[in-house]
Image 1: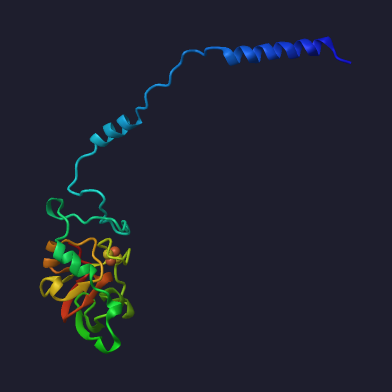
Image 2: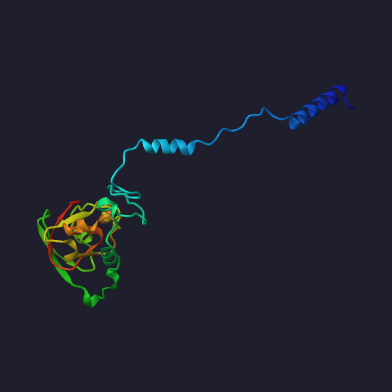
Length: 193
Ligand code: FES
């Protein structure tokens, strides 16, 4: 049996729902999105640096494959140097074309033979030396060392270099994780530009 009280309650509830549905609201309008303004104002408080973005030279930073190295005034690597570094593939050296060079590791106090299809970093690690590194992909400078005989490009080839500028290499700096010898030289490991 239907109770009058329940019917009345149902009717009242229906009226309330319909009234709410057709009500015009409070007139409240969402305020303008100011998040971009806030971000820009905060960015304006950060001092300018010499490093254009994206850029990462921190140890272990890794960076991205798209990282653009910055030089003086933010210049990119010179075209020729970039092509030379990126064009070398050690896997293309045939077994009968492998050559060995005497590399003196000054800090370690030893001279070892390193093949032209082996990185300076790998060769040093094979000796049991604790060599610095992070990304092992030429994207940071954690593994950098300085060739003391002259410009790095006269003694090594990089298979990949996304961190060093031409000026750095002119001073003998190389990325040992991606540096393959093309001549004999002396290197100071753990030296960054
Ligand atoms: S370990 Fe990062 S460039 Fe060599």
